[in-house]
Length: 217
Image (cartoon, rainbow, N blue to C red; front, side, top):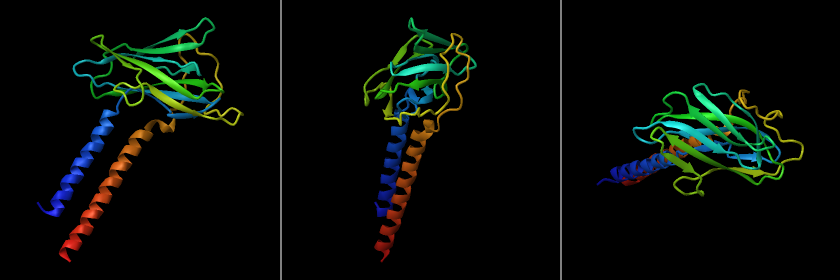
């Protein structure tokens, strides 16, 4: 086997590994991945539907104690239900499809706004994905597990209200107020993956070219 063919084969194998890693990491997540203490955020729940022959019919997200939900963005085709404590704090948000839901290879995003506690260290989002056959995938595990819970890291704030949006009143029962535009960090994982693949491809092509010239010399 020629040197060029060997390097081409190695490149194909590494590219497949990167692509597989990207697909394998597809799970229910909450963006952004990082925020600051005392800030107002628009959180985005990204839900891929991966099971064969069934659809995602319901998504429930448990709200951590260090986040106070104030508004939920309306979602056409989905019914929104809020669970609250006696003092009106939202403890979970559930989106239920009024139609067929999300088929395999499809995904959707659900948004809500809230305030991060002034002393928060991280926000642990436990999510439950229910399929049309009533099976439930519990995204509650530790990082690195098959079904990890999404985590938002919280950094120290300036103490002057590091708001990404304006303060909002408590969420109503109808969850009808619009939260606003999604955070720009929501696509960072995908962009980073493709940039890494592109960099790898350029590096290997350059190496092949150098080795080929040396062989001819």
